[in-house]
Image (cartoon, rainbow, N blue to C red; front, side):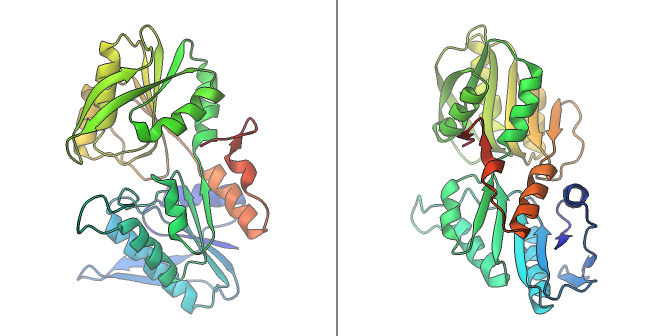
Length: 314
């Protein structure tokens, strides 16, 4: 087995290798002066079971292209099996044709991954679970929830209510509420645009409660900050947000600084610079991904990695 990394999240790849007990594979990745990417695998991979760690976070197109080129290089170097490890799957929000003359880009990316040489996919907290069906190769879909549960249970939060900031996240919020033995509420919202949302109403009781907002992804933080503002008006005490992938841009960071959210709990699936003025707790998923890689290599079951207290985490 060999693990290689693109440039998208080298610290996570190193942490995964530390967990497994191997060294990160050597490869030379550098840009040509015109912006094209050059890749050279600097060790023998003939007949090896190879894993490439590369979240397709911003710059999404660059990181995707780098992944395709790495897989092509490995395939042409006679690697036995190539598993693309995508802790974050970019373009996942474009998973359906919801208006005329638009693409289903999540499916296009799936086709391109297979065409580039992927024999298997390992990913985490997909924005839409049906994306697994876009592939005709095996997909192992992990959840960050077990890592989150462990951290939250240490906090021993009293009078806790788990809140889904939209209808789509209700299933995930319900799973958290069951595991943490907490109440459940939902925010009804209307999206104005890709970066603006309008929160309308809270369904459930949050007055005098500690609130845990659950979402899989935040970029501009519009959904979270508007939701927190509404929850505060409804009498919520402490507000925490749990997000698997915090791909925060400048707008999102500024909104979080001014928001009613006391703490944002996220993972290291995407590489993020240090952010001042926002309390962010970053939990590592290296152990989870490392264990999955070990089990895939030895053809063992990965089922137990996404079960908690005997029930599915999502």
